[in-house]
Image (cartoon, rainbow, N blue to C red):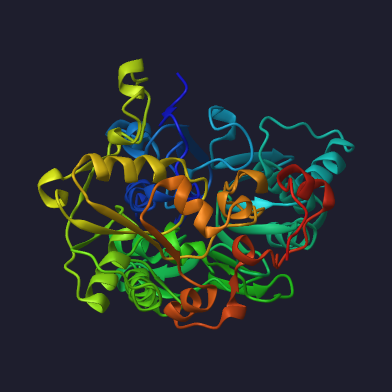
Length: 481
């Protein structure tokens, strides 16, 4: 059955994917990967998969659903090996309801078998797929990840070495990618030249093994220690020979996705030397200074809005409170709701606390407004709960440009920030006031330079060139600035 997603898509950008890889001789790594994927579940809830190898054979288990829905104790028992990779998926290319599109992807050409898990999005997939098809290669899925895996295997045959195959593939693929990959004997990790998607390297206790993951929170859950980021354009091989690193392609301008700080990454993860919680608190404090308002209570839209709401409250002196209860288990399920439940809409995810809201002027802090649909319903709920005023404060600028690098933000005409002024958005969502954080204040909250981020969804400055055919697929409007 097709997974049910709440009747209207959320205002926040849809998640990226999560990747996790382990090389740990003497360990059954499937359990480490299982818990690593649990820590990365926020990055994708449509499918999950684990592939392991024992030096001779490779075993794969993947399915649609959340990590605990896909894997049972008996599954982990059969996934026996000391090398493994895992993936949690939110689809930006390919159908979300196809088993073939779940990852890791297996690719076998000649004697080589590899498994690959990818976070990001390639922008030259069609060209690469056509080239491979002209060589008689057929595809089982519709994802750019299978194209990448097939390309690597194709070049591996030519170079008689997997590292050579990866290196040659990285010279051809264009876009955002943070990848963990494995053969029967080794674990590999590599990242696009701009570092759009995050990827970190860690070591297990007593240096018994190595871990690669999308975020540091996934290292923490398995007791691994953060060592460093995988550098843009870097290729790492981990095997019995140890950790081997090379600069596979020349690095470009560092362009880590700013939405990792605003929304995607877990608040307990670290990037650029600070926790996401700290950065989001500073964003909340910054918008309290730039857009003050008289109010009785500050609340955050759970979960990503909560740290910013505490920062707003501390800076403004307005008390922070819990005004919305989140049902964390209803967002994605394989049980379709009745029509009566569908009509409840956002209430299935968020329920206002009437006793905390009644008779009060409320500041609501959220990370973004992409489409405006759920924000409008949320404000209506807060008024029904008795709030006398609702003031929205958004800790990012208006999203005006679609993402081509792995975030599902639709065509430009579907982005409310591209189509309406701030005042028009305020009227649309029904807030008493609405303010966005500036690009400058958002970047300053991360304590890193602006030229280390991709800010394309805010300013239209894409760090990786987008083919015109790909642009036409998402951009319904000509650039306005």
